Length: 97
Image 1 (tube, rainbow, N blue to C red):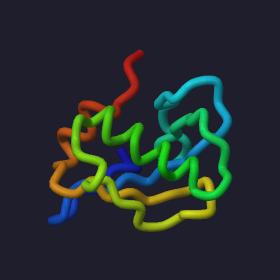
Image 2: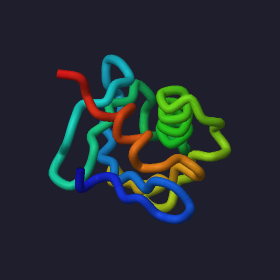
Image 3: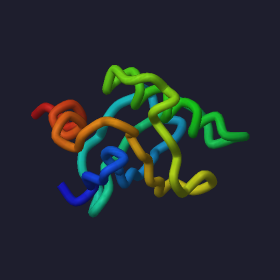
Image 4: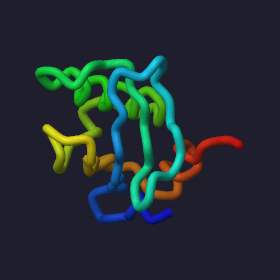
C-alpha cells in the first residue's frame, strides 16, 4: 500500500480528498494515495475538520491523535495517525470488496 507508511510516531497516510460527496466513505486507491470522499465543502477548513473526525471515528482513536502534516488547502494531504501502527490502519482502511 503505497499510501501508508509506518514511522516511529505512527502511521502516515497519503490521501486524495473529494469534497462535497454524497456520503463520507473510503473510495480506494488513487495512484499513490487513498481516496476519501467527504460530504463537507472545502471552505474555511471544514473539509479538514470533517476528515479528521472521519478518520478518528473510523479508526476508533481520539481526534487529537489525527494530525494534518501537509495539504491544508489542497486535495492531496498527508496525515499522521499518532500512536497507530500501520498494520492496524491498513486493516481498518482497506476498502472491502
